[in-house]
Length: 450
Image (cartoon, rainbow, N blue to C red; front, side, top):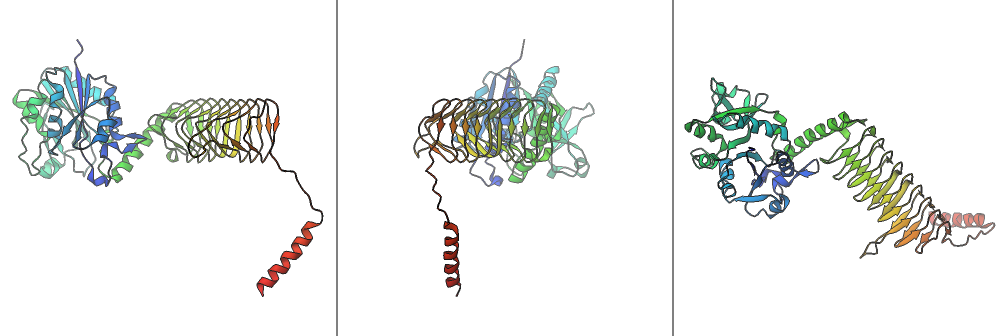
C-alpha cells in the first residue's frame, strides 16, 4: 500500500532585509518565484496535498501558489509555529509530511525523495532531518550525533561550545516526519529561548521521548542556500545559472562563453545549438536543433524551429515563432509574430502582430504599424514576398504571395499576389542646383561668422 504524503512549505517571512514590498518568496530565481521552485520539487513527488504557510496580508502569495492551499501564520513565532499553522489541513492524516522552506529554491526532488525513503525504512525512525557539510567557519546550527549515528540534538551556533562549533555537519532545515505524530510533537515545542520562538530543531529531543529516532540525510550544501537579502538572491541566481548551463551543455548545446549566457528555469534547448556570448533567455523559450543564436540577443516566450539563425542583437518577444531555417538578424524585434520557414528579416526592423510567409524577405527598416493607440491589428505577408527597405506596413494589411513592395513605401491597402505595391512621390531633378546652393550658404556662413 502506498503511503500518503503531504508537504508544508514555510513561506511566511516578509523578508525585511530584501527591502521590498514584494513578499520574499516571490522574488525570482532563473525566471520563477523562489517558492515556485520549491513547489515544483515537492510536486515531483506526487504528494496528496501541499500547504503553503504564509504571513498575514499576503494575498499575492495566495494567488501565486494556487491551486495549493495556504495557511496563515498570524504571529511570526518561529519555524515550529509556522509548521503548526498548517495543522487544520492535516486532520487525521496518516502519511508522511515534508516540511520545506520557501526561500531555498535550489532544493531538488531526488533529495526530498531520499529523505522520504529513509524515514519510511524503519518504524523506529520518526524524523529525518537534512544535514549538510558546510565549510568552517559558519554560523549554521550544528548536528550532534549519538554513537549509533542517530541525531541527538541540534545546537544553535550561538549556543554551541567550542567543540561543537568544530562539527562540520550542519542543519539543513528540511524535515520529514511521521504525519500521525508531527502535530503532537510540534505542540510540545517550547519557546523558552532568547528569541521566545518555537523551533523545528527541538523536534528530535521530543520524538526521542516517544522512542522515535531521528536520522540525518546529508545533502549538497548548495541545495540549502537560503535567501534573506538581495546579495543572497544574486548568489543563488549564480548557482542556479551554473546548473542550467551545465545541463544544456551536457544535453548537446555549445555555449561559447557559458558564464555570459542566462537561462530561465523552463528554457528548452535542442542538440547542436550554438549560443554566442551575452544571450539572455526569458521564460517560455523553446529552441530546436541546429539553431545558431548570435551574441547580445534577448529571447523570451519564443519558439525557434530547427536551423533558425538569431541575432546578433536580436530581440524576440513573447509570441514569436521562428520557422525552420529562418533568419532574424541585427537589431530586429519581433512580438506575437510568426516567421515562416526560410524567411529572412536580416536587420533593423520591427515585426509585431504579423505572419510572415515562407521564404519572404523583409528589407531593412521595415515596420509593421500594428497599434493605433487603442487596438492592435494584424499584418500578413505572403510566401516569397519581398518587402523593400524602409517600408511601413499599416495594419490591418495583407501583402500577397510573391508580391513586392517598393522601398520607402507606406502600405495601408492590400497588395495582391505577385503585384508591386509602391507609394513613392515622383522624383524631380533640378540641373545645376547644387553650385548655386553652396555659394548661397557660404555667404550666409561668412556673414554669421563676422
